[in-house]
Length: 306
Image (cartoon, rainbow, N blue to C red; front, side, top):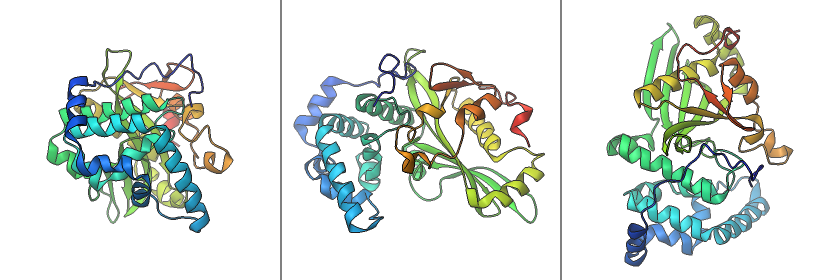
């Protein structure tokens, strides 16, 4: 599903795979985790919500089973490496994690092999950077509260969690909550940077504003000197990248968003014009479908305010 085979997202390098470790794991057997490969219908029942009634669910099941069969070797690589990282318990608790790469993920140009490498790159970074208890905490409950301000009587906070609702756009999610209501979500992940010998870089796969919360968003903008909710989350993201020591930030464009290659019924999920948004934040194009964001907290322009 690469839109340009000549330019397969060069900022994405391969994740580190240890062949001897994978061979040992394959021979040892992976128990319940590897059973997902043997029974795709059981896995489907864990990740599908049954929306649209029986007929639509059967259609999704057939597509899901075909993808699992077609990409079996890639799924086995993903499962064995995640197990090697000691994340089999997380997979059992959150099986949707291993199904994200079966469809467009992070960038619509990525092949299945590169999608798997991207996800493995994130989990390798997470295991090396985050404490085990912190990683587990991201995948349960409401996540971590990174910032809170009391505007009396309303409170405003930014949460960091796993990207349950935007999982195909990133593994992690920043959520802006005002007066108890979600105003905006930003999905991102860490991938190996092909420009920097595989060093971790941050990739923004999507930003979603809640259409039914426009009045609340305007109220918050008034309290934040007209700064848009999206600008608040982008600033928080840059601060988080700085704390993690990550210097390279990339972002998806209009033509490479995960829903950009779909028919209209799915494309309409993307309400944001990403190319315009990144220009407002002084980003630079790195290829036909991606943008490079400045890590500077002072880089957004006045157009990011209304």
